[in-house]
Length: 264
Image 1 (cartoon, rainbow, N blue to C red):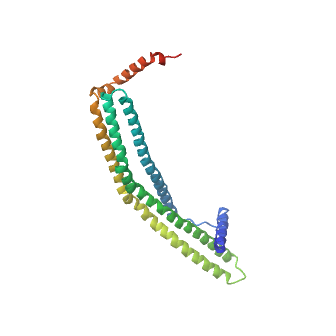
Image 2: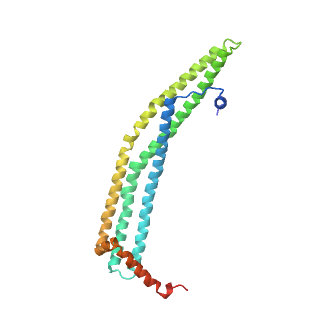
Image 3: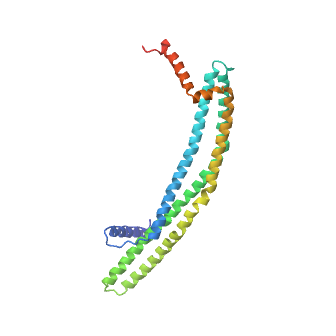
């Protein structure tokens, strides 16, 4: 930081302190405050969308990997006894279906999801540091303007012996006011435009996300439905009636009766 920049920073810090103690009046632009509040909410929402969007893709990968490991274990479990049994054939069909779904994650969900959803989110979030820099600059110029206005007021109330000091202070005030108002008006004018564009900007991403989820769910249903043909139609009815729970409990009771499962 240059010496000039250091001096400005110190002067602004002093102005901020004097404003807190009520010695310098603070300029409040309600229009800017309102738009900045809306912008900050949008910035926060976009950051959350980017985080949750990535978490969703990671979760889909994790779910698919876990499902694949589960299918491999079930296939080994059923196939160890009799490969020709209905259970073993169902387990093998389930494994094959899950393998296809797992490969489909990378092919049909991963890359398109990044292109249609994560990339647009990343591009939108990349604008915020630039906008925040403009807001920060505007706030610094506001401090300069408030300090210059206070200086002119004090010189007007208590004139200096040097007649040239007031005109010089007035010039500094006018320049500070002009710079501040230029930055302030630009932000007040352009922030609403940015916020208005958020819906049309994210519309394609939202539609793409729904379509990708729908396609993945449909493919999952189609592939896993093929596994159902290895099961008796009566199984679904028994499950709905609560009879499968009774069957499981019956098998557990037989296991408890084994000496190796009995309590010592």
